[in-house]
Each structure stands twice: as C-alpha cells, then as structure tokens.
Image 1 (cartoon, rainbow, N blue to C red):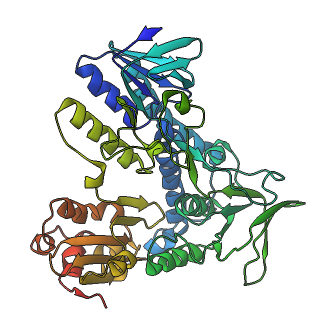
Image 2 (cartoon, rainbow, N blue to C red):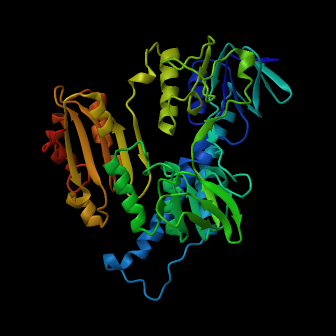
Image 3 (cartoon, one colour):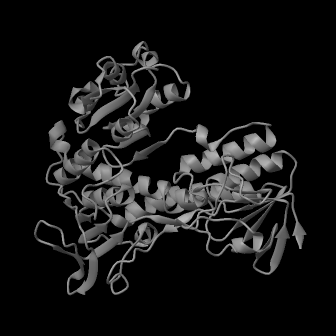
Length: 459
C-alpha cells in the first residue's frame, strides 16, 4: 500500500487545480483518473461543443452574407464535418494534454490511471494497487442519464458524449429534451445542415426559466427552421425504415416524428455508483449525489466531494469554485461557503442567454416588493449594428434594498454583459452603482444602465 498526504479522485475541472495547491503546500498527492484528463468540460462538454458551435456560427453567417452586402458568387454553402471535427479535436487535445502534463510533471504528484474504488475508509484500490491518505477529494463528475422511455433499448440513440464521436451529419436529428444540451446541439446541427426536431414533454422549453425567456428561445429556434414539439406527454421510440420513430402523443398533430438519428438529452447522474462509497461510510442522497455540507465536507472526516458529483452545482464554474472554497478553507484559513455564491450560468444558444440570481417567477413567489426593467435587443445599438438583434434584457431589483435580485439577458454578447450585474450583486451594492457608471459605446453592456433607469414596480 502506498501512502500519500492526499488523494484526488478525478482530473476534472476542480481536481488538478486542487492537486496543484496541495503540492505547493508541501503535500504528497495521488491523482486518480479513469480515462481522460480534463473531465466533462474539456472532453465532452464546454470545450468541444463550443468549438463546434463556433463552426456552426460561421456557417450561419456565411448563409446570411448577402444581408451584410457580401457577395459570395456562385458558391454553395456546405459544411465539411471532417474539418469541423479535426478543428474541435485539436482544441480538445491541447487542453487535455495541458492538464495531464501539469500533473505528471509535478514532482509531488503521482498519477494513477484506472477506476478508484474504496476498500475501506481512507483506502482506495486502483487496478492492482492500493493507496491511502487521511484527506481524500472526490471529483468524479457525472454522465448523461438513460431515460426510461418505452422502446429506448430497441433503437440506436446518442447522448451528448456519443454524438461527439459521430463523424457524420444526421439527415434529421430528433432531440429528446428541450433544455440546455438539447437546444445547443439542436441549433448547432441545424446550422450544419440537418433537419432538427426538438421534443420536450413539458409545456415549454427550458421550463425552469421565465415564460418570456422560454418563448423567445423557441422563437429563435423556429426562425432557423427547427421544429419544436412541447407537451409531448408520452414519448416512445420504435424502429422505422427511415431511422427511428419518436412518438409524442402531443395534443397538436402530427404526433409522431421520424428521424434518421436521435439524441437523448434528458439529464445527468453522478459517477458515484462504482466508488464503493458504502465501504467508506460516505453518505449519498437518493439520486446518488454525495452529501456535503456548506464547505463541501462529507460525513466522513477528511473526505470532500467537489464538482458535479456533490449535487451543489452542474457547471464548470461551480466545480472550479468548489476547488477555491476547499483550498481557501484548508490552506488559507478561510471560511468560504457554497451558499455564498450566486446562481449564474449561460445557455449557449445563438444568441446566448446569461442568467444570474432569481427569475421573475421566483421573485414573485417570494412576495417581496420588487422592481423590474426590460428592453428588447432591437433597442441595443450594438446588436442592431451587428445584425443580431433577437432577444431581450430583463433585470429584477429589490424595491427596498435597491440590490439586484437577478437578470435574464438573452441576446448577442449577453453571456459576457451579464457579469457587469453579477459583480455588483456580489458587492451587495445598489443598482445605482450601474446606472451611475459610464459604459463604453457601442457595446451591449452600455444598455444595462438604461434598463435600470427605467424600473417599474413588479405587479
């Protein structure tokens, strides 16, 4: 058995950074990775999908070239998927190799390749070796869940990972699931040239967003020729001569969709089922997420869970913040907490949605007196100049404290502009901090003060 000061299981977003801090503090660290360094973000999440979305955006702009006065002549717009994938893999490989080399070249870090399983508290088996430490950090991430739909095992289908391994271009991609993954893949493949249908069992897309946000996103997708089927009360799948039949039982006809390929984008589960957590006495919830407190400690002293496997966040930025919390508290005598962070994320449709804090529905449900301001992107000069004026901005403010409660910014550049508001929220400063600021013209961010200068009571 090999003994270390600490063991990090999983080389996703939080693990390698934490290993670097621990070794810099003089500790010996074992890092265990079962497959690919960099975790979901680098290998099957943010990096590959956003790289492909960039290619899809280029195709879309080429199709719209005439709107900008650009003449392409007798040139047909086509997409070479082999080049798209080669570009993606170059970006992914560079990121993955950077993570792996930083760990392997760290003299205080020992890398183990394989699946880690607890054999006892503080002891893990990796292949034929056993390793032990009094501090263990579980960073095992998550994976796409397989929905329990009738016929799901009778037809071929993709999840977000396996679709990335597909080198072709679907003739008709049916996406089951109308949230972030489904929308991003659906719009991307539509721009590559596929026919796309998105099937969602709920009454609207991205159901946890406000109704006006859901409606605007649907409008954006349908403008590009994507068929959206909501209220799909009884989704079922069956083989078909032309590919796969996706039955929906939607109230509006026709009820069935025939696609060449199907993407199942209906949620994710943690990679905790093969960790042997019971042998270490580590508690999990009913969904398999490792139970942690506000400082990411499990019920076993010295064992922490960081990243997607703890159920306290499902994003790369929340995983990295988990690392920051643990490192600050262990090494810097800090007292940082998960509950201190403000909800923030983006949906990378085009245009993107930047979301922070509370939704309008949540503010209404809270019963607090509130103000709101909104502007369509057609009144944002920068968006009009770029020819990308779909979407709108909405900001919510506490009427008594004057602090920003939340925002939904759907429009070009809004995934960046939203941080102007987020930083003010963290500072607990009044919204007038933004209205009194001078923003650069012409930008998307410059309209945020204007929105806040025209607040109205939320009735």
